[in-house]
Image (cartoon, rainbow, N blue to C red):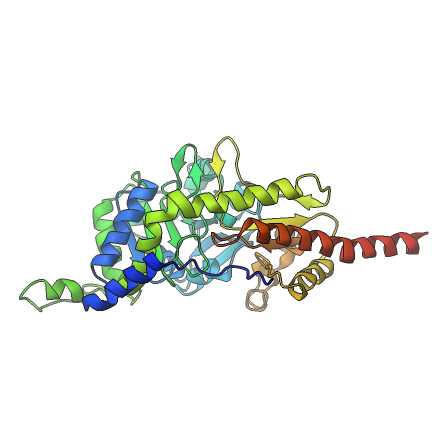
Length: 415
């Protein structure tokens, strides 16, 4: 038996939805995208949603709209995929890498120390679908000391009067925060619909906002929509619905729109997301937690507390007492036995480009420590109970083979 790490969920309903789109004669941005936006907005309790071609694009759009550019700084966690920081880099700004807490998420106390007059935004990342502490982040951003250091450069920034709070919610669709669906806790949240995410459009992302942002929300999303299509006032589908072909370019936008053929995949998945796909993820994660709970070397990921419930996107197991070499040997052991596991993530401060551009792992010791002992286990709706049990058995065998031998060797050397 071979167990892949994260195959996309594709059933006959999805195939039919995509086929319907292909036969409709309209495959780029059109009615399916608008329908998916409405579904996402309803799911997370937002009044507006805008689909784009990736979460990276979504982050860039929001930060660009806020006016982030050369000379500015944006605080992002070192424990994330590179796209979080590269969205900042592509706008000409500088990512400032912050350390994380033991739940993998951004440390508000660390962020406070990193804010300068150049700080325009903070991007929090909800690792594995576990929401960050947005109450603490909002309180920190609203603190008089933070506000006194904020230097607004445009009307939008003046309206906020503080750095923008953005959630990189790539993992978090379906999470819960303080009794409400997750998605409107930050000023803006950006979901990912990449092939391995809880809900996929093959490639894609979606922007939503809090109701409380101190600007005209409808105007914001109208502008963001223009920014996804080169700043063009009439998209291709709209032009087909009227006799007027004329359009204008009113701003220098990007080409970041989502096509209907991709949205069709997401629409079909949305019909079963809350009733089938998410519950199955919960069942798998619960099975893992029960299996590892009694093992003293297993450090389980956060899943639920009084305020938060994870979307169960990833099961990020940490192994007490191992180093990176032993972690990698455990992963090799699993692969050799047909069980694909992964690592989420290599801290940005350990990646070549970031090191060459002035970022040091000495500044993010907890991110480095957590990554060195982390192994991500498969979680997806198609995974059967028997396969999940085999994953557990393989990880346990890897520990006994790799770490047990290493511990015995250390004891023999010491004696």
